[in-house]
Image (cartoon, rainbow, N blue to C red; front, side):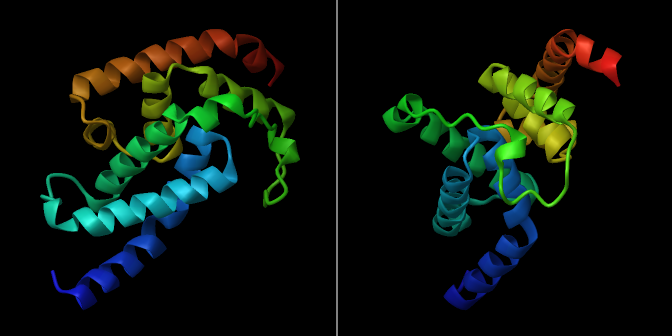
Length: 167
């Protein structure tokens, strides 16, 4: 791909997928600045590796996979483990919509899931990827994706049982 074509592709990809990548990275990392860094790193890696994209999945799925791996790398870093990034939804300054405090319970329950389960939930239910796309983004089989989603759903159901009763 020629440099001009690649630039055009990058601009289109950033416009089309940037916001959903940012939401996914924020959900994964819990920090807006880190999420923005992860998205930038995702697009940089995609730019560099575009020649290796084989088209076996959609561009969105490919970018989500790069983003998840980037978020994993960030979470493994020593700095991430020693900083308290916990913040409730009502403390975020740039939320455009109001929310009920119960929304915070769902977010916290999802973020407490083991990483493999949390990744599947974020991609399937927060990003709206199909189970097949979720499996591709995570580099796992579709049956494994379904297994993780079912396990996560069972855990969340138990965790949020009281929350459901309040609705």
